[in-house]
Image (cartoon, rainbow, N blue to C red; front, side):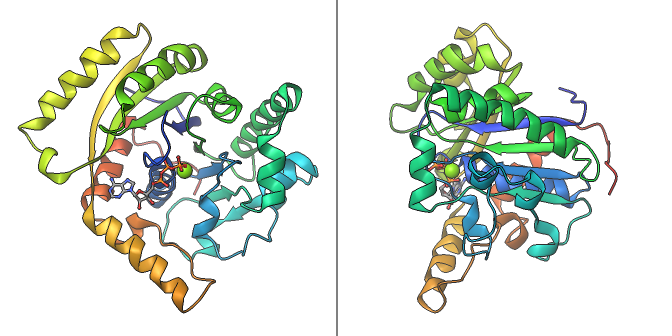
Length: 289
Ligand SMILES: Nc1ncnc2c1ncn2[C@@H]1O[C@H](COP(=O)(O)OP(=O)(O)OP(=O)(O)O)[C@@H](O)[C@H]1O
Ligand SMILES: [Mg+2]
């Protein structure tokens, strides 16, 4: 697969908790680290999570303010490289969604017309951040799980949809239904990954069996461009560091979560993120850094 920049990736899944936000922020950070100007938007307005990586105490302008109060998008884009003091070659622009009750409530009650307006806004935002001064090469959209207007809007704005699933919780058939009924109609390329596979199964014995399972039940049954990209193992160090992060709240409610790839670049999760970047085959292109 060869991809021309700039392009937009939506990260989605049928079920919740499949690792969308983790993949979105880590892939965005990795791409910025190796030199791409990258943007990351939290479009999971009903249950946002990317705010937890920032110490703004959720009081800074968010994408909710852009949609509802019509503040300029520029005011809601955080320069994460400066803000989090990240060692990146490219820039990383992040648009957060607010976890406050008043904001999540408004967003989950959007009617059809409002949802359509939100989609139009998203297309405008994408055009905006592809232009100067941002000149973004890659835009990553973190979405809400399932089939609803939030995910539909994100996927229809994306060139590629990365769909995650876990091999638990009857995810297989529901994921197939979602891709066939929704993604295949909205976007050109769909990449499928199994996340959080217990380490005992992430090996040469089970890898081919899992590939066969996914191909037989999903990719072979859908006519559009759906590719199975492989497994992201469950990374025990990732989970341990998340717990450590949470425990920091005991001492400081302003504690922020760390972006895993910056803490443990050699770990299995980080390596999987790198392999996704390789698969995206950006052809050695580097943006204006
Ligand atoms: N491969 C992995 N190895 C270890 N832990 C993982 C892995 N993938 C995800 N996790 C853990 O699972 C947590 C939940 O994932 P995340 O919040 O990204 O899921 P999500 O799909 O965005 O959920 P939601 O549907 O609620 O938005 C992550 O914060 C991380 O701690
Ligand atoms: Mg999420």
